[in-house]
Amino acid sequence: MAITLTWYGHATIGLETGGYRILVDPFFSGNPAATVKPGDVRADFILVSHGHGDHIGDTEAIARRTGALVISNFEIATWLGRKGLKTHGQHLGGGYRYPFGYLKLTFAIHGSALPDGSYGGNPAGFLLITTTGEKVYLAQDTGLFGDMKLIGDEGLDLAALPIGDNFTMGPDDALRAVELLRPKHVIPIHYNTFEMIQQDAHAWAERVEKATSARVHVLKPGESFQL
Ligand code: NI
Ligand code: MN
Image (cartoon, rainbow, N blue to C red; front, top):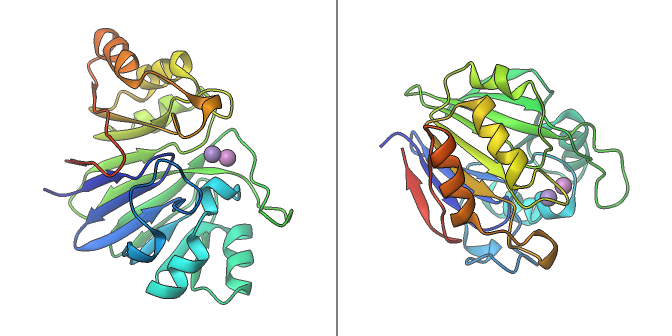
């Protein structure tokens, strides 16, 4: 297998590829869906999509303990760098070649204020091309946008998309997102963590598989999908 994706509930994702462990939006403390404690996770790299508390989460504690390099937009990377963490700042539309693959920050429609009210720059999604060529898009928190079609033009193997509604796309827009992105495999995220974002992921999966050629994999928190 070339990449394994583990969903920890909410938008918290673990990727394993090329022998590296990458944590995305590591929200464990205070995440009612999380099945592991922040002190138990391993990470070589941490990706932070935007400044909200349910995404920056346990980044500081995990990065301090593991020495992981934190990758985010320039504003968040600078904010975390001032706390003494190892960081790499990028910006939307820009990609960089890391040992685990080529990572580009993509557009997202959302906010990004940091927990202390600091300006957190623009929110991002992630497009990862692994060293073995798999293309993975992690939308993280976003509304639907038409340029998802451009991201889809990459030829996606896997996409993680929010379906919770209220703060992000809901099921209807997430289905339209699949139509624009045309990924082979889809994993729904950012739902059922809190009362306000309750969704029936299995019903959504059925709709998507009927309307598109994508395969939807509804994971339980802690479960993995291998590509
Ligand atoms: Ni958010
Ligand atoms: Mn969120």
